[in-house]
Image (cartoon, rainbow, N blue to C red; front, top):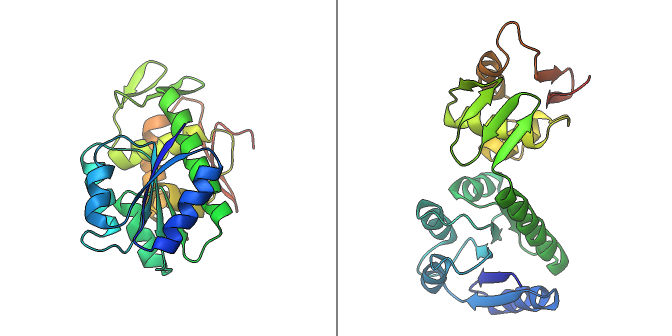
Length: 226
């Protein structure tokens, strides 16, 4: 039974979260303020956290930042009445895995949390991603193609991991921005082009079969037959 920590200072909202998740078979604990929530969150005893953005004593951004900095990587669903794009980006950049704005439907909250838990379980089972002769080790952070080691910068590694996890699918620019940089929109820069160009030079050297492809008018794909 997954253990969930709900950090929420509004009692009515907290009761809704606890009731919905309990109904679905989760073991839920409630922390009513940021200080108490932070202490429980860093204990490492939970499978996921729902985290209010605005909390007394310690705010949600601080809590998720401390969690990530101390190596606690359980899924965190940020919940907030702040709907501005900049606020959502701040929450995701701080370490949140998803962002839900208030008011929300309890069913959607539970569904988002279930998706995050399912994704975490899948990722926990995978240590090496493989696409043809390309290998990416999630533990050692090593990348090889045809046995040749490829040195990648952190953003390049994250980008390649996203491409490999979605091998064969067309990934739009917005999807890539959201996954790598936390933007829920295309900011209209050449950021993706610069990083993909560098990644291509390393992954697809002259003489090799190109794995990373540009799908004109759509986006990008790895190992796609387009």
